[in-house]
Image (cartoon, rainbow, N blue to C red; front, side, top):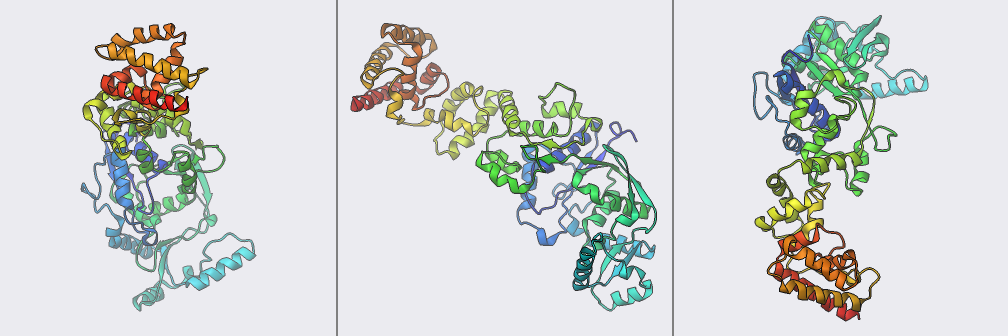
Length: 497
């Protein structure tokens, strides 16, 4: 099969045992891109059979994160499809049936070993410095007698019977052929004592029944890849194209990125979790752009991609198995680029919730004026209220010390602000056309540099030493409120003299 021409069927199959993180989002993105590029099908399958690790609300967060990223699925638990159910917890009997088929073929067996016996076995293997794997005690049981013990209600699991001799050759699309000696592979459990399947059987059965053409997943599955191929071959099924993606390294490049590091990252305003990134003011276009490049490249110089660009240009032939360090500086960079790529109206709608969450009463008309002058200056949406909240405040309360101009006294600064007040009061309105040249001329008359004078005005009017362009900001605030704030600045300086 030519990987990129025939319509594919791919699945993103998360477990609702935690939050959607960058690694999972990247897998979903590559699945989505391959499906859209080939006119294929992107499937969401919920692998919820690990009941002990199930986290309430995790499935909804996973779905919300995918939708925020714009990765809509064609088949899944809430949209339906011809290959459901799409939750593994609803497929219990299907897996049991296939496990029994393997037993009938002599390729799996019932195991009655107790947890106590298995713990003792592992301890002995550790003491003897042997590989930790099942010792095959129940593998030798007579199948008929084993079936009677099961019928009598004796607790048991079902294990896969790995061939004792020879090796298996498996093919990963990124790494080529991998040869593994069968004696190194454990007789893994397929069905637990509670009758629920483990991933190893369930995922292989589902991939076959759902006609999955490509399995894109994390490299942590490479260790059990031989087992999965054995299971598929035991049934005589066609194998999908296997693609095990690169691992994510910590930002330092040292060590695999893990969920435990996220708490430390949050202190610096970063996170590996999609839901957190949304709250931190990242835009989905930038997140997609960044994670696409963490394991894939189009060429040696193109880095900015919209989702539409990625659909057109993505290719599994250019995936790279080398580990990729998470670079949050690059996240900020791309986030700024994608913010500047938005229309004013779109950006306005996206920043508004951040102003509201910061406690501001937002006037939509004012926000539409503010958005163009902050668009070039923010790296995240979260920065917008910090940079431009003063537009929505009735009064600002500057730090009095910051009202004193560079190389000036409080008296000098107050006198300068009085001159500014008189000038601006005389103007019909305050905007770049009417105010900029007179303000610069005033600075000359006061024997000040424009930066000195504008700095004092900026603090008085915005409450900040750094703001969007001053005169454009004053135009939005309006003449009356600007003059009120300048008078307040004069009063504050007067109290310091």
